[in-house]
Image (cartoon, rainbow, N blue to C red; front, side, top):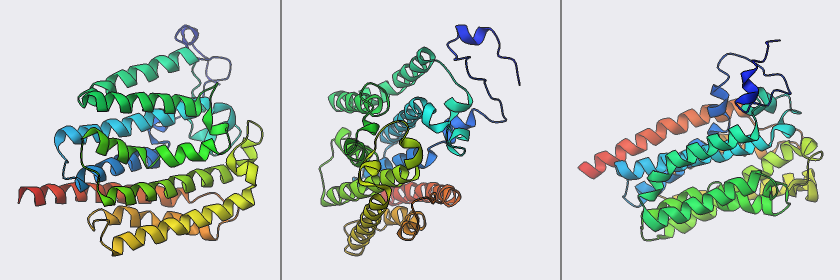
Amino acid sequence: MPTVPWYYKDMGFDTTPPIKTRPLLWLTLFTNHADAWVTTLAISVVALIIHQRLTPENALLSLAIAGGYWLAFAINDFFDTDVDQLDPIKKDKNFFVLFPIGNKLFSAGAVAISLLLFPIFAQYRWRGLIVVLISVIVMWGYSAPPLRLKNRPGIDILAHACFVQTFPYAATVFMIGAEWLAVDRVLLILGVLTSSGAQLEQQIRDAADDKQFGQTFALIIGPSNALILLKILTGAGIVYGLYHIISGTIPLLVAPLGLIALPAVIPRFWRQVNQPRPEKMIRVLIFIGVIYMIFMVVTFFKGFVS
């Protein structure tokens, strides 16, 4: 086992547990939850394309929103180390399990990243300040004690429904000052359905570990009932999305981004409580989604120029 340098403690590192080393350790800090913050980027870009406001300045806003979500999930991982280290799969993905650091150093890093992102939001004046205020309250309140909303049954699902795949879209439209359209309402409702389903899926997967550290909505109603609700939400989301694609409410240019996700969510209909979600497939779908997002942006600019 490698020796822990004496100066790590002075730097704020927690030297009580052994520091693990492995190639590309720092990469886990960025790749974990990549499906979430990449999806956030795509959602914000979709909002800009729908409202014909995809400019270099606003594209930077989308990147900043994605960066904020990456930070939010990093905060979540930091305060989930006690839970994640019990899971043989999650402990190898959580950077803070592999490389423990102290509260002061982590807080300083989180504040520094927030300050780097702040000027981008500040360009949108009072609208940007409101979004920043809401974001800071939610990202810390959801994961960090004493609130730790993720362990408050009902509020945990509600927080995901309002902020995971809905807030990036709503915040983008709000900050650019665009007029709200019918498609916005449709996509926000779809975001509520998909965000709630994604959180339920995680809670069902983590039920055994969560019992030791607090209550979740899935534990309160029981994993079997939560699985039934997950199937209902998934079915409703698929039917609702397909209907609005066929009816023309959702533009054909952005519709494939939702269709790309279908192979990851359809297995929910026959998955059992103790079965994990298809992580390898999700990574492939993320890659496909990024490629299509680039195609979508290029197509938009070609159409705008012509």
